Length: 441
Image (tube, rainbow, N blue to C red; front, side, top):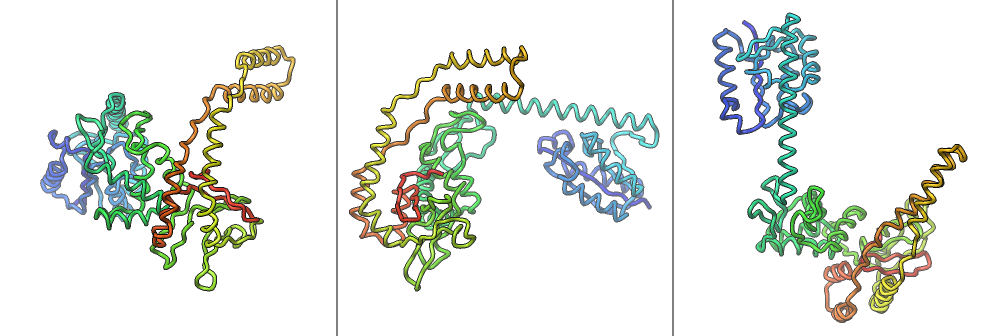
């Protein structure tokens, strides 16, 4: 009695209407095996998987091939060739394995004979036709997706928290938008994905995995960007706030305040002026908190030997933060009033053209030409690039009001306070503090 593997594959639920559902294929294969007195040693089903996918990406096919290598069967059955493969190169990779272990295959609804040259040619032709059909289908689907994107229509039915679908477009959901905004605000306050996760559980009874929260906080749809379009959907989060969250997640190590009995007020906010590394907190004598450059402490790869007292830094900020931000606002005004440098772009283009003429007439060497041309091209690009938009000034009165209430906060609230007011503090080895309302890295 011949031992047979039954292989079933379906890519979409719509194929059920064509008799290609998992149940229809399985029943047909089992009936054929019974009618031909074959012993079924296993049924291998790849559901929702395209025949264009490599064999390595098809779990059931991999289990079937393991059975082939273990010499558990003699024949593989499937209903049609396109259930097996629509990719010629992948077909022959698997065919090598089958031939090595003397296992053949058969389609029960089509007639193929791979023992003759003409039969193998027919297989090649049918696989080529199937591959071409799959390619054309992929192109049609891609065209449909591009057309939907140009019309501002969603491609799938899943949208981020704070949005909903109306008339095939993403719109802000008034019921969940406040939660989404609160997530971004809490992250900037806590500087901790796990801290935000705990907050969501307690406040909204929502449970997010840390990875899911990171994806949410870096999803460009919240500023209206998607599929390469800047205004694909209405923005829910201000761009500056979104970029602060995104940059923080990209460059800061996440620390969960609930993992330690101590709450460090400035975790994630402090940077070493000498090497740019973060300063980490440690406790001395069980109660005094200091911040140090880990690159110096652990590896002696930095000259920043000084340890900064949390109490001293806290006192300095309370006394000097308003003055720091007033100077910061003045610097913004100066930058806005500073005239942009005038660059004669036409003169640069003329120089580039002359340089080309010199090179084409063999009057300068290629190396010199490329060096000078690159310099001129970079100058032209810089002159053509619009000046970056300046950040918003700090609300000094709001800072004063918040500082006035600082001593009434508990320690956890004080940590949130500094997370809201400060983006980054750079500390030099001689303890000069430079405070910025947003992260510079």
